[in-house]
Image (cartoon, one colour):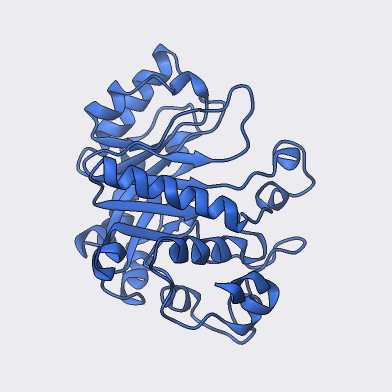
Length: 289
């Protein structure tokens, strides 16, 4: 497969691009980003062709912010946008004005042809029953005009495919520690799109931690990345995938960046820009690639 075709199909990046220190360690500054002031999104887009926008989970973005993101990245760069938690984590009635505000915020990305999809991430406590089925169907119907990926973490959803099929949504595959009630679904695509999220495998810190960063403080090994690359290639070949979005959420200390670089290498599309010395010095295994 020509390199340009590989790049178009494999959309590999991280969940979010800005991780300044809030409490404790974990910042990307001084490891991936330089210590001097830099436009982090522009810098990030030199290495990756997509990003999963995390900030929209906490509050809708403004159209001006979205327009700025588009203007600071190359024309082939794509965004996937996480849906507002008001839609996925709140059991209250979803207000039409909230839907309108969210859609208006991401409109500049969509109009520019740079929106990969909207990600609807539901919590593990979102179990499948008649009420939640209706809620999910209603929510996805309100975004009928957008490509959609849906992350359902509880295994009660594993055999529920009708709602996603009817709404033209793809299930987001998640790699994370597996517990009794964790989803066990396999890589599947829809309309030529595959969506994969890597949360790390820090099982002992998943539910019990002092700081939430501990949950995601995990570095996938070369062997683990290779196994995932093989699985992705097999799925892409068998299902005629046109776009495969893959994001790493093991974000502390830029580990997501390292693993995204490693996956690109395994899939035969290494980053063209020389890696920052600070990143390679922090993760010497990158020198071997």
